[in-house]
Length: 316
Image (cartoon, rainbow, N blue to C red):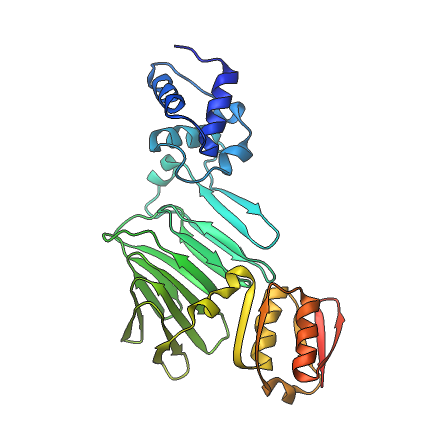
């Protein structure tokens, strides 16, 4: 059975978009099972369309054939960033043959710069949502008995259930372990505290031979200076609001507020009189532009701002 290239192109495009009918799926499956069936996938459709496809739209065997066809001859990793106004999705594709030749899977470093968010789809279908000024390191394919990633900054995790492979988030000396759940980790370099908040499921957090177990609605804060945990109830909507560009502050110092706004808008705040940074504020910034946020601060604290480039000077 031979299929015209135009028909192949149409069906594969529908497969990638998730709109192919069962008859079309069966037609492709039968066609690929024929002996001596060769397809130049990189010529059939542009690489952008293969790279932009969701992880689960192609059967495993077909995915292997596509990957071996479209990967460069050097068999290096392909990282595809799909940019948006405030967020991006990273889809990582790699040749299985490439990893069979390595004892350890290659590592990917994904960064969300200041002023942007990124979402990363992992090989196990877990998703990491990175907040501004954050970095995560993870293997292209999870092997062994655990799924371990490294985080600096803040991220919200949607972990695909796999009871045989715990999902572990390493943030310096602090380790957060789950089997399948959703939770937020805030662990920026230079911050004295690391915070873990659970929205669904159960999470175990460990550091310095100490351990706490969190259930939905609970939050632990680990002091790097005191090497101790505190646990309490959390407003999970407020903690994870950054994913919708909603920043919530409750009795926060102006210094802390400016640090978070600085990451969010990719600016740097400087105070003429540093004493003003100790002032406390409660406010919500819901999908506001930088200018709108500064206007709100002016009203809250009788503050003045002067911006030059990405540096904002605060006067009281």
